[in-house]
Amino acid sequence: MAKAFASQADLAEKKITFTRLSENAYAYTAEGDPNTGVIVGGDGVMVIDTQATPVMAQDVIRHIRTISDKPIRYVVLSHYHAVRVLGAAAYNAGEIIASVATHEMIKERGREDMDSEIGRFPRLFRAVESIPGLTWPTITFDRALTVWMGALEVQLIHVGAGHTRGDTIVWLPSQKVLFSGDLVEYQAGVYAGDAQLAEWPQTLDKLRALRPEKLLPGRGPALLSASESIAGIQFTQDFVRRLYACAKEGVAAGKSLRQIYQDARRELDPIYGQYPIYEHCMPFDVARAYDEASGTTHPRIWTAERDVEMWRSLEI
Ligand SMILES: [Zn+2]
Image (tube, rainbow, N blue to C red; front, side, top):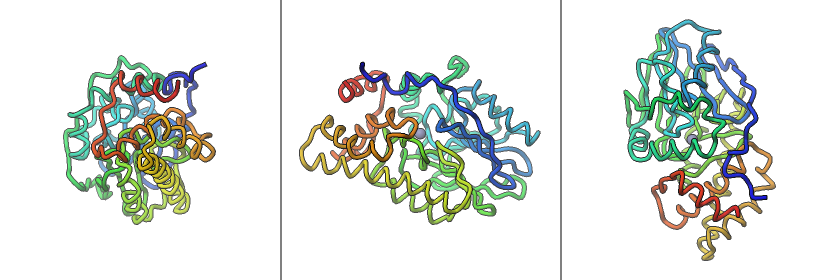
C-alpha cells in the first residue's frame, strides 16, 4: 500500500508537558509536535510561537494561567510557518513581533503555506475553522530587538538563515535560556523544505556561541542543561550537513531527484528513522536540498498541489 501523504495518517494526540526552565521561562512541549515558549516578565507575558489554531492556543493560555495572571503582551513569531503562527489571535497580545525577513515571507507565500501545511498535517490544525486568516506582525526588526519586560532583558535576534530565511531566536541573557524555534530540533524529524541549507550550520554555530544552559527546540523535549542544549544544536547540525552533502554529491554526479532521494533515505534512515515526522519531512527536505544544490537559492513556494505532485514522484 502506498505511504499516506505527509502526516495525514498521523492521528494520535500527544501529551502536553509544561516545564519551568528558569525563574521567568517556561516550555510548552508535546512529544515532537510544535513547541511554544513562555516568558513571564515584570509587566506581562511573552509567547514564542502560537500553536496552529486559536483553539489550540487556548490550551497554552490555560497553562499560562496556572503560573501567572499577567496580561499576554507579546507574541513572537520565530518564523512564518503556519503551524507556528496561525493561533496568534487567541492571545489578544498588544504586539506581534517578527523579523523583517519573516514579514516578507508571509507576504510572499503565507497563503500558499497555510493551505499546504493544513493539507499535510490535519491533526496539527485542530479546529482549523477558528483561524481568522494570516497572522501579521505589528512590529518588525532587521537584526535584533531588545524587549524589556520590567527588569528582564529579552533579546530577539535574527541570527541568520537556516530553517527559513527569517529565523528569530529569543534569548534571556541573565538566565542563559534560549528559544530556538525550528532552527533546532531534538529527537524529531528536521523539516528543511524551505531551508537555506548551506547557511544553516553556520547559523547554528552562533547559537552555540551563546552558551545556552537551557534550550527549547522547535520540536522535541526541552533541553535542561548546557550539555543537552549543545546536543540539540549538534543533532540538527549533523542532520542538515548529511542531508545537504547527499544532495550535493548527487547533483555533482548528475543524478535525478528520485535517485538522490533513494540515496538519502539509505544513508539517513538508519540514523533518524525512529524520530517523529522524519518520514513526513524527508521528501520535502530532499526536494529542497536538490534545488539548493542545483543553484536555486530562494526556496520555491510549496502549494497544496505541488506538495502532492512531489510526493507522488518520490514515494510511489
Ligand atoms: Zn518551521
